[in-house]
Amino acid sequence: MKKRVTVLLMTVTIGLSGVAGFGGAYIANILGSSNTSGSSDSNIDEGFSKRQIKEIVDEYVSGLELPNSGESTGTPGVSYINGSVEPSDLMPISEIAERCKDSVVEIYTESVSGGWRMGQYITEGAGSGVVFSEDGYIVTNNHVIEGARKITVRLNNGESYDAELIGRDSQTDLAVVKIKANGLKVVTLGDSDKLIVGELTVAIGNPLGHLGGSVSEGVISALSRNIEIDGHSMNLLQTTAAVNPGNSGGALFNGGGALIGIVNAKSSGADIEGIGFAIPVNLVKSITDDLIEYGYVLGRMDFGASLIDITDAWTAMMYNLHSIGVYVSQADSDSPLQIGDHIISINEKSVSSTADVSDILEEHKVGDVLKVKVERNNETLTVEVKIKQAIQD
Image (cartoon, rainbow, N blue to C red):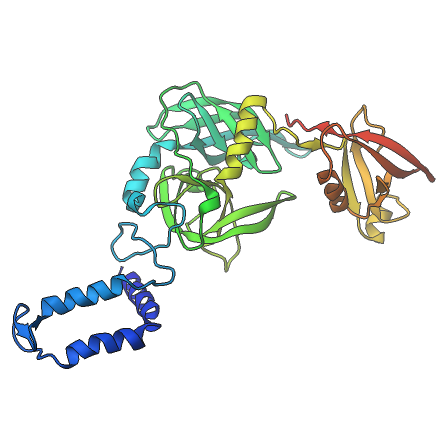
């Protein structure tokens, strides 16, 4: 705590340094002609008392516009900048934890894995979730529940429920599960568009899979970090709040106890600490609404085939291909594309990577028909591919 106080005092000192010339002269003119002897209530020179001087100084300083001045969180010796919280709504971290703990749950999964050596066996996983409705809708990460044959939710009060998967979206790493319960404590939603770098964050989750209800605090380090997770590029909030395996799907709150993000990743490595990421709550809200109502995200496009990048001659030789490029690795039964097709262009736009295909798809919508030129069995032909609504099982 002493170290934090020192940092705060240094910050204030730096903030005041720009006005030291004028402010110092202003105060010195008063103090320079004053007799400092006597009690705090004694008169000093021409009727000024120490108390009056303090009032003059306080009035002067209160009129200054100090850069990056934030409101206190209520934690002694700690000051944060807050953009998404009104000063009157700021709470101590202990109060945030008390108010929000029942809105964060633990999630446990069972999946079937297998291999030719060991046969099939059960693997267990753990993560966190956030209560989005009093009747049991809970938001978590897609990677927490993906492939699970059984999902169990444990509330903060210790009660456990079997959960049903309502919908998931791998592109945003979000999923919704439902338990048969009522009267749950629903999280208060914040506004991630109003966040600013440096404001308080509080993470609550289930780190390591068996420490449910753990609380950690930090600040917003960055607002839009482009991070690739499971092959999907995502713009995430970066925070210094401690994040560990098991925190995935848990909550990131602001200084007013409002949800600002769903925790979904931690940078790992021997020399990496204090770097965690969360999905901004405004994106979470829009995706969750679709998952709850439809079971999938409206407008998410399905090309009708899975593609693979062949980027070098060695890989091409392994696949018995004669050139590098984008190839079809899987195709739907109703797709005009076939496994092994080499995609040359889409709507006369050259394609050299799967990223090119993604960029072209982003310019279209569900229902559009694309003219795809492919090379198949040493022949070049053009097929028409209709973009379908993507639905994840």
